[in-house]
Amino acid sequence: MKKSIVMLLAIATVMSCNKKESTTVNESGDSMEMTTPTDSTPVTSDSASTSTTSSAAVSLNDQDKKFVDAAAKGGMMEVMAGELAVQNATNATVKTLAEMMVKDHTKANDELKQWASANSYTLPSAVDADQQKKYDELKAKKGTEFDKVYADMMVNDHKKTIADFKKESAEGSETSLKAFASKTIPALEHHLMESEKAKKAVK
Image (cartoon, rainbow, N blue to C red):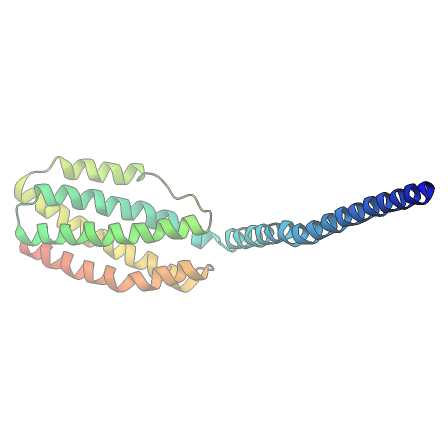
């Protein structure tokens, strides 16, 4: 009788151990099934986003690169000169023009920065040597002379800028950059019209 009880206990113990082992294996299997898709999902997502970024960078042709660099530097120059004119202009029409330049070109510059960030493109961080020279020359002017130089600068700059933006709109390869150029042209044409009015006002 004692042997039978001992045998039953031994069998029960073995069965209990087997059950625990199978449970552990099942739990481990479940956790593997749970983690595998989770682990693979970010990898797929990362590779997808990487390919998107690289394809966006590759799609820029020489025209796109030339345009975006010139637009970034030109935009910075318009804001710098505009801020100077807001402080130094003596003619009300010129001062109003300068305020519009600062507001509109700051907005356009921000849009260009957003595009650059989305496409992993590094924009120029400062104006070029010629632009800096023009800015320094403008800064040295006073009174009516300042107004004339600034208004004349805005007319000339916007004629060139409009031509650059139209060229990008027609010849660029990157869709969102072409859209930015096309969308900005009407504002630039308005700027040119107001610049010509300011130039006449200070003759």
